[in-house]
Length: 539
Image: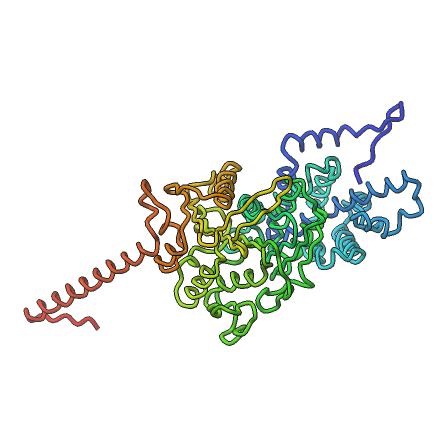
């Protein structure tokens, strides 16, 4: 609930001057930036991995309370006063019912009390208990356990209090703040952490390519749920109906599982993320699922993802070799392929090594290509991710590359038969600077890539040096089923785009020759000293 307003002489409400000034300051600096600065005051005694749950939990509380108070006022205006404390009359309108002790107005009045952390924990627990959709979603006993400074916490509450989350539903203020905080936390947690977040521009690119418009969407490593949020935004941008989409996901880390459930709840998105946080391979929460769209950014080069004799007969790799336990890349691929419907399409990110690996990976990759499942391979720029600076690859896998007609929003698109082709694209020179040391795709980048891809789906396109090439399966077979784009795309200006594997093999041979020459020179030198009567003992 917003802060109490003063009454003017003519009975009109007037916002207190102090609050007006603060809100004007927030407008000037952007809400999410002001909030981040306030939240950062908690740092020092609390690690980013912990305090993100504090901040995002409070943002959720404010949002849920504003929606509750808005709906409560509507019930009163409609003469339904007797229903204002009945949960059913809120839940039926996708509004979370809040008991008095869980309402923002109750908490903000007690913000400076020594027991405010306990009051917030109690509020979150009560909301989760009363709303089944939030089961397992909200921070559990975080505020009391962390021993937060009461003054700093009160200051953060006061800043969040100035956000009017329901003022302009089209702006998605809370969603914007949540997204901003997730990205900032991912940056703050640094390399090796922050795996809960896939940068927004990558998610946008995947959504615009596979066009998740109607049906079931699945993400087997959903992190904080960014793929789902962008899918809904894609639908809204094309005048679709959110009710025609069903969301399924799975997440291994419990705290990230909570972030995802809260992220969806804040935006009013219903989703099935499984009964609990669980390993997608060892405890598949959606065994019988068949998805129309899959969007994913699974862990790169995950080692020891299964024991030597585990999952050998798993139905997900039926018809293929068993993925090697040393690297989960092809385990993720086959998991997704097994969950695609007959017309399903998937867009997912993998490390570049999956494009040309040998052994079981080679056999699986070859079978995927021969089964006409691989539609497009896009190598991405470096520094797109906050957790690694390596270049990675976007795979598009399609269960139906045959000619068909598809309706996307108001447009009807005719697709040609692409079953004997694979589109390769090199995006390493795309992107714009972001947060000084990172890269992100601009809107123009995404449009150029997706326009090229969709044009290729409809009509044959000309090869563009250093950008794209449509290879036939015969050409791919001649390259021994390698999916490295530089083996197909012509490069005329950039020496750095020499094929990595080929270059490394050459360097390895040259280095071996140098070592042999060095060993030979050393032996010759030892022989000379020995002949002179001064043998050298190297022991």
